[in-house]
Image (cartoon, rainbow, N blue to C red; front, side, top):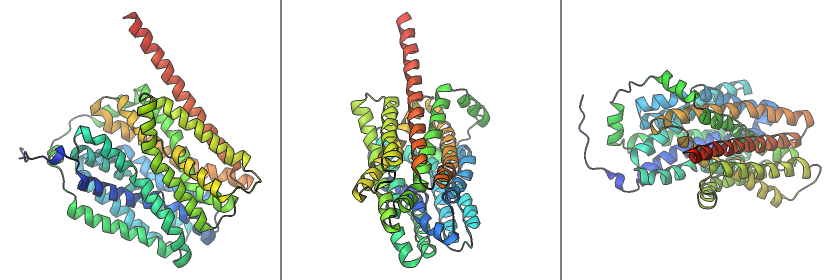
Length: 420
């Protein structure tokens, strides 16, 4: 069947309206995904939970998201970016509203698992919308701006939700992001315009075997090594996101509202770190992303050792803690931009979508597994000291291994060129 597509294309300029709507959807998702942890002190008190039990919330959230990460990208290809954003944001809005009525923590875990379905389609829907609405020369800029949406959402949540939780209780507070999600669905439904190129793609049948494509990616050793490294990056991010507010609240006896400010500093560091590391990588490291990972891993190790060794038994100033919170966000959560920019370097252009889905599977597996372990270790020692040390070592050692592999591959490549 033939479809007439208008020849007039607005892609010659920067499509701010489309980018703002896509970013708005991700900000709302970020308020939930990154901001829910600032309410953990309220959960802990209300349901009498340990650190390890609280970590299970993030595990359940990412369990379903991890299971369907590859398939969700395929589904968005079939249904379109607009459908993906509406489905994702609507799902999160509904299940957040149900959070306010949960009689116990077990029900919250079930609701978190269902909300994971909504999260799983957001990233592929946003990426598809950007790729279809922006020409190549604007795509990296648009993606860089969009990638800050999640930490911006987390920053907003960290700045507002703890204060509201103390004023009106966490059950009423959690309705706010739910209402914002439903408002966002209305905006997407009425103002997001599907690009003509996307309409054409949606009506074209893709005859490439799904499982054949997956097998090909699995046999790509460079991609698989990057994905395994992504598992450890996900473990670092998941542990930090889940426990940082509790770490300040329980280890340093900081109030819930001040702990929320600390988490806001963490989010602010993440916002600046993503484009910041990209700039450092491109301008000062010759686009060597592997070296950038090594520097990030070493910097995070220093921060983790300060938390785990040098602050043990001391009473550091609040300013020092907030500065370290910012640096933790820059390193432990600021790597996303250069990581996802690394993926296209390992596969062909037509395989990038599947490759991103595969790496998301590993990332989310790390996000799923690590938070309960990080919290359980803290429960055993009644502090987060050993948890920080282990997390710093994991990040640094995995960064060293991926860099050594890069050097080895470079040496082999240079030797082959010399023979020619």
